[in-house]
Length: 78
Length: 190
Image (cartoon, rainbow over all chains, first blue to last red; front, side):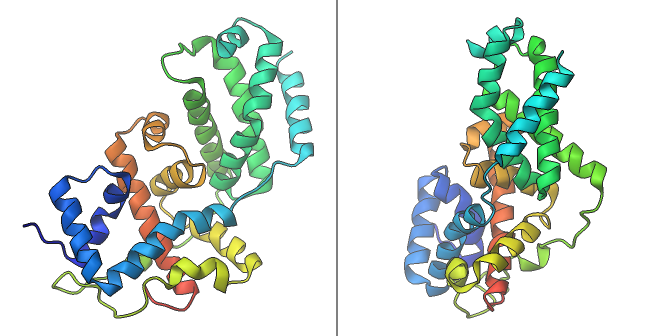
């Protein structure tokens, strides 16, 4: 049976979440995380990071930017 | 196909492409440059370049993949010209482990998941922008495309012309650093 440490689990998290980890290693990570309180917190914060950064860096294109783009394209592409 | 019509001089087709993709290109440029003015410049450069090079677009890749490659390059060029974004790396926020491979600190590693509840929204926006630009460029670009613009890993690999494994590795390193930085912001050392 394959065993995983916190360090190995952290190293493999992306592959684990993308579903590309080989089955024995995936099961080893599952087993480790089920037993390790620190890793459960780690996985929670790792998974939340993209969502938090995405929301914090979201921007809407101002209408003026869109108008300026058309002015530049008209000028450049004549 | 719209891109093919645009490449043969169909102005209406090109305008449709601009209308369809401008907001996404702006969003990507804004995240990559971290500045409103730079994002606008990159957006304009992208569509000027796309129009000029449409003739060389062979249709082997999806148009959007080619467009986002051009957009990424334009955004990075704008930033390079500015040369004002030198910042310390986020390496120090990578997780630490003891010699047995266990977490070095017995702290609540899940706290960073609450950063958006704990921190004032304005501070979080400011810190998120700063943190993104403290990532090594390779990691930042992959993270922005994959996690912020939510492109599938396969498409990011095509945009960046690297393997999917390389994309996963870069995004992973970025997530680890940013996770650690969020931990630090909420008062827990990673």
